Length: 418
Image (cartoon, rainbow, N blue to C red; front, side, top):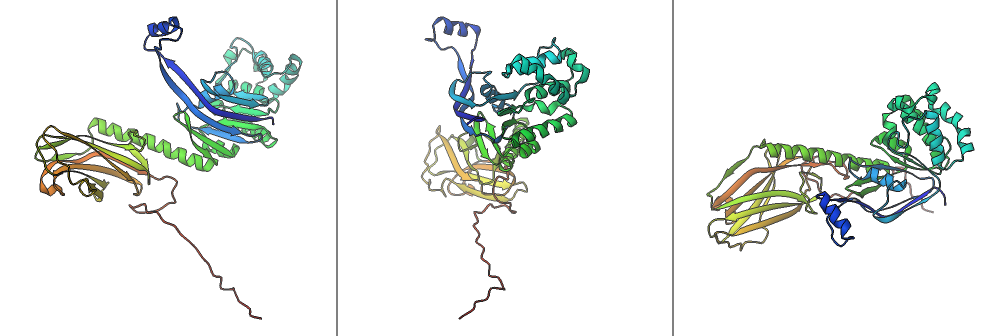
């Protein structure tokens, strides 16, 4: 079947050497000495794109999109896995890639056609169509170095799509063109798609992805985070962007010491570290509604204590208590410690709370309540934000798991007995 892409367990890594001598030592030892660290850009990537499908690839900068395109177009070699391409590929990647700046637009167009597999006679026959679609006029016979970025796009797209390919791969290059030519390009892409061309389209423009693609994948950290309908994938992508931006803002405030915090206690124990992480151990400050998190607390003890307790309290932005618990309430009422001991306590819980900003308080005390001997009470030790995910919209501070059944009896239903 032509026009098909099969990606199986694809991975790409780059070697990072601490010095040139490490590279030399590895080369001289014929691989027996490993002087590099591997940095994986893509790992365990698998998907299939069948003939006539249109796939949008989205993701933040550094997610691996450009690396994936280089592997698909054979300009880079995978470190593991395989890529199978069935059909003639036409690709428009980095702006002006493959153009010789001292050659004219006409010569560069000829070279592009020949690189796509057309004979010299076919390439010359296609020049008129390329010039007509690009609307470059006399600039076709000017060196490419005098072209504007928009003119580069006009020439590259016109040459790459002068004939309908079986597979069309397009990167973000169209985003730098003028609005008129963008619309013209989109119309041609849509026309080819409707005629059966397989489309792989990388873009940050959600409107273009929704308009051109019937499927989308989200790359995050070199892996596929979502694969499905463009609407649902883009909604999740927007939440990822919001989480990363908000997470950075919260950490910047924490780093500047801008948060308001108070501490009290008799000093017989001290909380040395508090962090909140995802379930995989990755530290974060922004989470989805219902996401399971782990709140880590480290405590040093300076005196013996027969019944030590570590507690947590979650408050909303108005300072209202949302949820609190401690180790004694959770079944660890026998935490006997000695001076010099340390405790690492991890509370795992789902954030079944509404979207908003929250703060965390952590306390260490002797007995069931902090009123029975407050050793260290750390108020506002960290902040976090909860944002909406894929759950149905709701209002309030609690995200309760709700199921609904609806039955209807129409007033016009009449039973007739015979």
